[in-house]
View 1 (tube, each protein chain N blue to C red):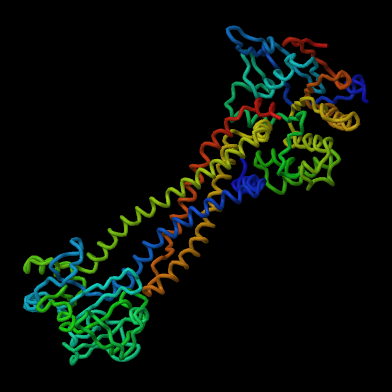
View 2 (cartoon, rainbow over the protein chains, first blue to last red; view 1 turned 90 degrees about the vertical axis):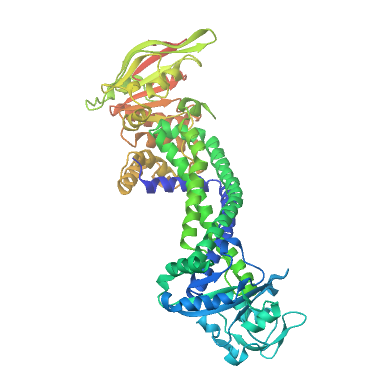
Length: 387
Length: 238
């Protein structure tokens, strides 16, 4: 029996027989795999942003009137009295901090101009909910800021809206605030946040007495699920944990993964057909050679394995090229999203690399099935009779 | 040219090499509502040495060769080498059998164009699972034997027709087969180059191999120890 090394070497020689055709086919696979890698890397990047950046710093439990699955309410809709109700249960449920939050998204057709306005009690400060954040210039919110027209701006929001300490930011036609601090870059979504004192934002939004959610920190974050369940039951409100949020994001991403993979699949199928065509043409051209190999003692299985290996090698070479080209694409996407929102929206994770290689191998095997079957069934007498 | 009488006298029998035997071997092709007999039942023991199979085009020579080699399936009868019925084996079994017991020389050299002369000779040894160093040495030795030691790294396209045919003979001898089947091996060569190829084949016959040479050239047939004539599918002895 021929060794695997000899078989692969022979298959490689077979492919390099017509280098231009082989290169063009491999390029077809490269483009298909690269498009798949770039498409799917978007989901991977967003996952990373949520798990590594938001996951570590957000509240343990957040209470709201409508949960993630019902969609984000555009206006604060939770009566502020809920804060008092939760505080009454704080000792029993080992809640260490209760922070009412007003959130308002300012979205723009120009994505770089979109920001999130985040209002929270000035006395508690931003670090209550986001402990890692520190100001780069100016200062953070202090107790005396409550109800004052001041704001502390995330690094990316400051860059995109051209704000610095002392600048004026118009929240509405009637309300403008003065920037008193710009936060250090966090390479996360928080970079696009603008923090305001709770009352200031409530007034600006016309939402006095209402909040978007109440953020809670627990003595023991592991109890988050039990506390959320207890709060939801006793206060008749939606209470979600970080992991609820992350699993909601994960579910949403999976659906989007499937859509993006579906789009890439078209390119992959076209690439696979190109491989099948190239290998099939090779088989037709080499009918006499395969007949000779069979005549001098090669088993049908050997010819089948040789053609299948050629197909596999071709797809694998294209797959590796696709991952490299995909990396370049991811770099380009991240360059854009870093400028836009300070985040790496795309990422090439080990599992995506393995998936791309796995798809390439599968593509090679499927594309090689028909040509290898044809090659192994060549009649020796017919093949040798062919000039 | 060596005369057939001279060659017959110089064959050295080798008792270790199995004999090639046909028993009632025939091939009938269906044709419309009837049938065409390409080879009438044929029983024969091919002796060691050179056997020439002669006959005009379409007489059934190639049909006989295809059946002897196991490329085609007989309508009846058997091909037996060393007690093994070739056609009772599976497709893979027949391939293994050919690798071990048969060497082939075709009218066109049929070398693998992407492999060098040395790699072409190595190929059957690679199929047989021989270690790289050993098979390389064996292939070099065979190329030296056919006088092409200095052409080892050349591709078939860089060799002359005669040189390519000699590489094909070296390849046919790689696994030291008992039987050499040659189908018009000089058909595409000029007389002088053809003679070199015939010299190599007769040398194998002298060494005790069974060499079956298909030819329509009477001069070539004259070199053989034995001659079989084929006409309209019927094989007769000299």
